[in-house]
Amino acid sequence: MANKNKKNFKLSIVEMFILMILQSEDMYGYQLSSFIEEHTDGRLIISESSLYPTLYKLLKNGYISDREAVVENRRVRVYYHIEESGKTHLSELLSDYRDVVQGFQDIENAVNTK
Image (cartoon, rainbow, N blue to C red; front, side):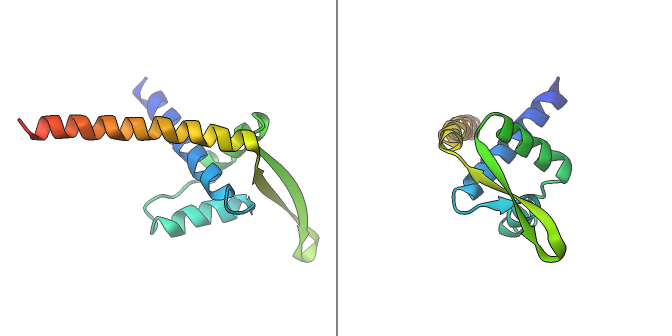
C-alpha cells in the first residue's frame, strides 16, 4: 500500500510540474523533463516512465492538448499545451499541495517545541 501511495503522490507532483511549466510555453516531452532537471539543479529527474504516462493522462482528461510539428530531417515533435481545464486542475493540485506542506510544518513545529 505504501508504494502505491508514494507512486500516486509522485504522479501528482509530476502533473503539477508539467502544468506549471506549460503555463509559460508549449513544450515537448524531452524539453519538459530537461527543464525540470535543469531548474532543480538535478535534484529532480523525471524519467520517461513517469513523464509520458502522466502526459497521456493529462491529455485524456482534457487538461492539455497536443500538436505535431515537423522539425529538422522531417522528424515530428509533439508539443503540449495547457488548456483552461488544466489551469483549474493545477490550481486544485497546488491547493492540496499547500495544505499538505502546511500540515507537515504544523506537525514538525509541534514535535520540535516539545
